[in-house]
Amino acid sequence: MERSTRKIALVGIVLLVVGLIAWIVQLTGGLLAGSNMTNVFLWGLMIAVFAFLVGFGAGSQFVASAIILSGKEELKPLARIAGACGLACVCAAGVAILADLGAIRNAFAMIVGMNPRSPLAWDMIAMCTFIVLSIVQLVMIARDARSVKVWAVLAGLAALALQIVEGLLFSTQTAHGWWATPIMPVDFLAVAFVSGFALILLIACVKGASSKALAWLGRICASAIAVHLVLALIDLCLMFFEGTPESAGILAAVGSNILLYLVELILPFIAMIMLFLPKNRGQKKPALIASILVIVGIFAHRLMLLFPAYNAPSLYLQLSGTDFTTGPYPISTGRYLDWDLTFANTTPYFPAGPEWLAMLFPIGLALVAAVVILFIMKKLQKDKS
Image (cartoon, rainbow, N blue to C red):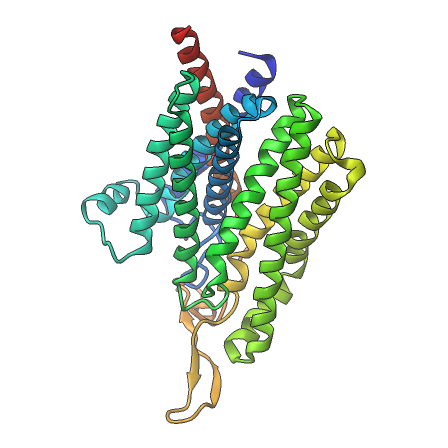
C-alpha cells in the first residue's frame, strides 16, 4: 500500500471512529434530543451528507464509464479509482441515512414491508442495484475482462437511474415548493457530473496525472457546472415570477440564507472560469484549486436543499371560496417543555455539535471503503497474473 494511501486510510479511520461514537449517541438519545431539528425542520445535516455522497458516488461512476468507453490509455488508471470512489460513496451514503430511520432495525422493515408507491422504496432499489453492478464492474476492471465495457454501461445506467430517483424523491414532495419542480431531477444529474469529475480531477492532480487527463476532466467538469448554474438560476427565476404567498416565503428563506446560497453559486462559477481559461487547461494548480472550490460549493448546494424548503411555511390559510390568503398555518414543533415553541411557522436550524461529529462517520467510511476496494482490486489483479 502506498504511503499516501495509508495516510488516507488513517484519516478515514479517525473520522469513522469519532463519527461512529457521535452517531451511536444520536441513535441512543433520538434525533430531536441530539440535534437542533424539530417536527418543522425534520431533515438535517445527515440528509445533506446523504445527497452529497450519492452525488459524488454516481458522478464518479459517470467518470469511470466515460473513461472505459472512450478507451483513452492515459485515463485508464483513473477508471479504477473512479469506480472505487463511486461504490464507496454510495455505500457511505446508505449509512448516512440510517439515523433518520429512527433505528437501524427499520432498514429491515423497509425491505419486508416495502411500499412500491413510496419514492424511498425506489431510492433503496436504485441504490442496491447500483451497488451490485458497481461491484461486478470493479471485478471486471481488476481482471481486465473483455466484458468490462458492458458492465461499465450497466453501472453508468444504474448511476443515471439513481440520480433521477434521488431528484424525484425531492421533487415529488409537493408540500415544499423549493423542491416541487421538474428541474430538480435534471439538476441532480448535472450536480452528479460536477461532483464526480471534480473529485476525480482532485485525485488526478494529487497523483500527478498527465496534462491531457487534467484537461479532459476539467473541460467536462466546467461544462457540467455551466449546466447546473443555468438550471439553478432558471428555477430561482420561476420562483420569483410565481407571485404566490408560498413562493414569497421561499424567496424570503433564500434571502435569510443568502451567504450560503452565494457560496453555492459563486465558488463553482469561479471554478468554471478557471477550468475554461485556455491558459489553465491541463495545469495542475488551477485544476486543484478549482476542484476544491467545486466540492465546497456542492456541499453548500446540498445544505441549501434543506434551508429554503424548511424555513419557508408549507401551509397557508385561505378563506373559503376566495383566493385571499390570511397567513401561514402553524405546525407542532414536537418540543413541549417551552410553550412558546410548541407551535411555529418555521424554526431556525443550525446543526448541533453531535450532528457535525456524526457527519464524519459516513465521510470516514467512504475514505476507508475506497482504500479497501482499491486494495482488493489490486489483489485480484495479482491473482489473475
